[in-house]
Image (tube, rainbow over all chains, first blue to last red):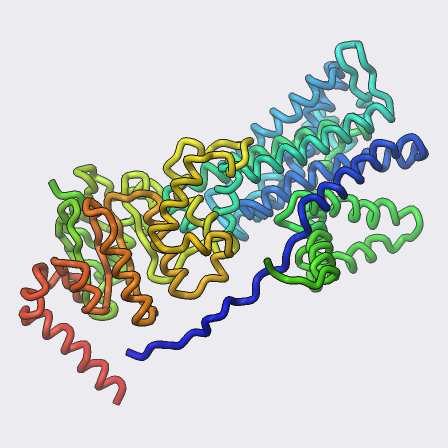
Length: 334
Length: 254
């Protein structure tokens, strides 16, 4: 038997990540900036940033699925829109505008919806999973569009007011901004601790090597379903906020193109991280909605940016930041 | 009572009977080698036992329990561990994280969602013990992808050991290893607790005799011999199978 000689030296180590203190500093700085922002900003921009932060929660929930158990769903808008409809119907048809109630109902409805859709789609993997989530989510879209008496059909539901809290607190534009900011930060912190927990480590293991996870004894389908429902519920919460913010719930909020937009936000921001999808949501919003008031070519620019990220920056915004950090410090490895 | 029992296990792929009416039983703490020419069905048999593929007929019992159609995760829960012929690791994770995931599989904390995984001392100490046993404690912070091939083989063993299996299936544990690495692996396997039952697929006869006192020979999916190394060596059907295989190889090379 011939023995291959293998070089003894270690393969090149991976680039060092930015120290967590610096990341914390950046996060706290950004949070502070967002806290003082309404003092200086126009009402238009306060509204725009509220919108971005709601989309950031939505993208975060999908990024969690794509980055940890690596489930690429093309039906995530069903949960966002489902939560939006649940809150909207409650507010418009039953005149319940208590934030606790609308938010909770949005979360729970989306959780139940994701339990059903996840239960059916997680029997498959890869591209089949993606197609089944797309198909089931489009069924939700059809229901939203056709069930006139409840959903308002193609017109949707108009006149969803800002929420209130037990008659004590009425949210206005600025108050609602702070509410969304707190919830976005809370969602991030929640998923951050989930990903570091034993459960989150299992999800990461499933994303890397599911076969081995099963061989050491994990019933991987159960873990994936729990993750799917968690992400679905969070998207539903974002949807409920969306209904209050825009005042209008329409079938486009459930349409698959919104799922695709969320997918782009995650990829552009950086899958496999939590901050990435949130930053991706902001960038995509600026390229899409933001630019559209200046040029009619915003969709084209957005497409070009997406192509750039897919071809040249697979790690997204966060990946770029990491490699810049690595280069600035010029030292690689421990 | 036998810890692992196979009864007339059969698996067909189309017209081919990959595993044909295989029966044997293994006592607790026994170390058994499974040998046979290439394509004899050794890995298929492992996949049938560990639940990766279901058998067409026959029964598998573990600790007296019928586990015939258990999926891999339930087999692992019932006390069966396995290593893969081609390493199946978490390459993007550190060595420590690899083992920790496997250790955690049997702990009640696996559904814990909020507390950091670093905050479970019992998890960390159990992980440390496994790392010591497979001699990777000094590499625990490196990525699995940074290990040498031999070290990855050790980690492969570590993942299986971390679940504290009653029965451990080892699929060619020394495949592709240098002589030095092979010696180390044999030492590690010999140092395993005496009550752990081992079933080993191996080609290297030196390794086989160093580890097992019983050899089961498989050819075309059937058991053609089952006994001590000496008995097997003198078995004419075994000689014919190996000689036949060699002759075939020579004619095909010519």
